[in-house]
Image (cartoon, rainbow, N blue to C red; front, side, top):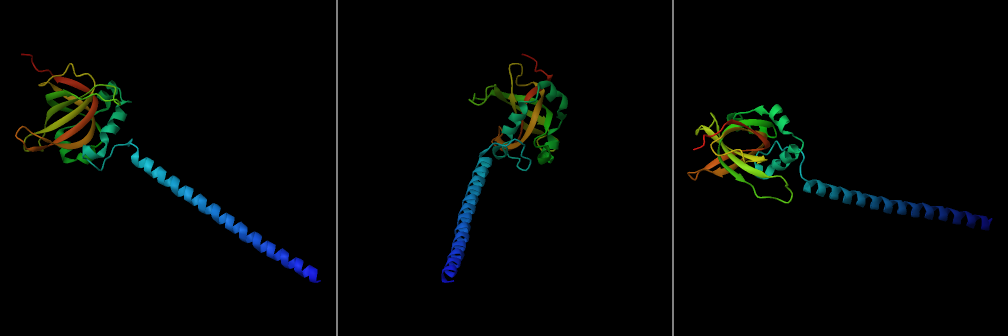
Length: 205
């Protein structure tokens, strides 16, 4: 009887020890799993934070911060010149200055008179030529009667010149501040595109 009692006690102690060790191992595994999940989530968040956007930012109208130039460039890769001409909507400058957030990311064509054209510096990541075409667009919502438009154009600029009147066709990316000839600050409407339509060519002197 004494031996059977001791044996039973040993069995009970063994079972208790087995349960304790099993819980300890499970607890460590759970803790390790949680730490991996937190680490992976942190790395994923960092990757998402550092990645470039693929959709237009429609809550920040400042081109310096909204990254819409990058998104417009992505969209241009799949936009043919024929499609740009066909599906763009004619838009006036006063409509944009009244409702800038409503127009962010929209494909449009805007009429304006060119006053300056300048090729942009080449880049390792941009294999195609880019240029900035500056225009004056009529604007009844402005005291000056016109808005400054920066048309960042991807394509050949050999057939356009200052004084020409064109439709610039592209995505409205937002606004920036610039300086006019009098030294004052003006708001500039920024459009990024790969197409234009000639309306009136300046007469050669």
